[in-house]
Length: 372
Image (cartoon, rainbow, N blue to C red):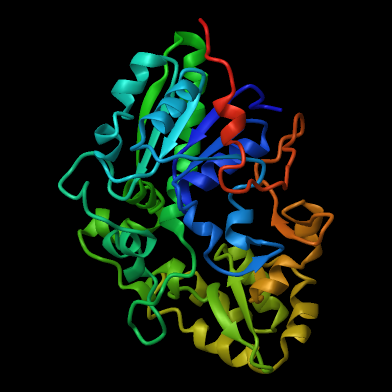
């Protein structure tokens, strides 16, 4: 597999770092999860099945577990021995915490110059907010994306997805792999300062037209992506279900309005997003005339971007995701998310075994010192 022979020390908790390192484990890396004495918090968060939480099961498969108190000299020495032969070190503590423990990049790079060290924090290692505590919701609020998630009542709504966490995970993974690739040429590792806020803001190119072009915040419901375009909209059906139109290209609008026998509405869809898009009200009334199943039969016959609004359990049970390997069941009935990085050669091999807290302490305590 792509990452065979890569050893990762993962000191991170919750979602961004553990998700990053699980993707690496699925592709062959040896990931050693270094847990505090109380264990990874997500072991106890949310619903459990067969002794493990679903959250932990989908961020820690195939990893090994060390439970270490890094304020204890013997535990710290064990970690340092592992650093000497590690390729990647991931941590997610507040800036300064690793330095106080003597585990910062400058210190560890003296022992192992080839080490790729990735710090994931809320606001990054520099700047006036670097020590401010925050999880995903606070980062989204502080970065403008909760504002963009405007509800029907015009007030900000709770975001459904932890996009700041996941953006940081994927930016971190990209950076780690870049650094490993560069190390092949230089022999030198590197330090990555991954900010959840930076990572989230980097996902906003499609939202920044009003900000960068006109110096104003968007009027959310009038913008193309959030309700200002008839062909990029949520519509209710007669049976109180919902569907989406998700492609504003004119070819899709032409196909839809020709099907509905109302081609004159095509001209409206050629207008910019906003109040002039009164085809929205027309489509609202039309979609209310039939049940979702009827619309599915009709819309599946034309080339138009549309999808039903599925409940989460319905979405994850669909055959397409099963065939793609993105949802699967192990031998004892636990369901798992697959790995989305799907190579033709050397695909991921998902080891669904989960470590008990500190299960591998003795294994690594007994391992020989690395001799260069």
